Length: 370
Image (cartoon, rainbow, N blue to C red; front, side, top):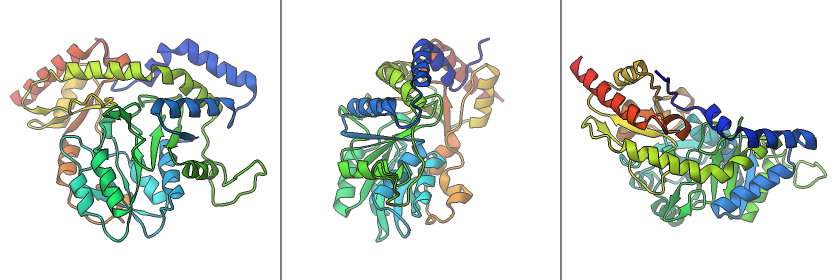
């Protein structure tokens, strides 16, 4: 029996290994390892791919969020509205700025920020909205954009799971003041280490982030003009990402094909993610509603299929974020108990989708019978 990992970035590297090896060798031969021509080439290519004027690469998705917020002037005394059903990085970035997360509930269908909840939680301290395109499903950016404009709020999109996702043909990352991407190895566009990027159509904002990522320098005199950081994407990661970027759309199409097969699941005890032509299915997370999720997970594991749980407990239940305002998040709480992420990476699930479906159906029957 072939053991299926929930995700396997090494399999993607193997798929493009010859090109990746050549790109890394080129960096080593160049003797230019930090902020060199390969970083510039990737920044231009990624901005062009997204249809956005500026891309500033940084060392992680977390820093992409934090530096975006800092460049927008978010700091102590400010609140940033975001979701609790997300990775810790989203809210950690808010804390890094000295601001406070205000968690609001998610839409039960998209699993992204519920615009009604966002609007009802705006107060005098609210400075920004930070929507997360969870699992590669675009948030309701049209409505959130109108809310931000009405209340004079900044907006930074967390696109860490949504490389290539779109709304009516327009790529996510282009709706807010800035978009923040992660290139962690498991992402739809992932490197062989950490990495991230800030994208924006605002030249002034891009310049601020470029300064912040490199000690607050504004030119080659190496004079720090502000409180800056060491947050640079290295040339090796940029070279690898430049190799993989042209294959992103193909990989996303393959993910959608796997997701289309998974949407054939009809068990009444499972709720499926939305079918959205603009989604890129970074994860395919089912909601297990009438059996114990952990028992189903165990049944799948015995059949050689590994799964993952994203995200439990949700952030508002974690000690690091206890300073956030108390809140009732019933949809977030429910989903955190029910969501189970299946293998959807093409190199893992592409040839095994029907096997995964059959395993889920057997697992559900076993859970009900026992």
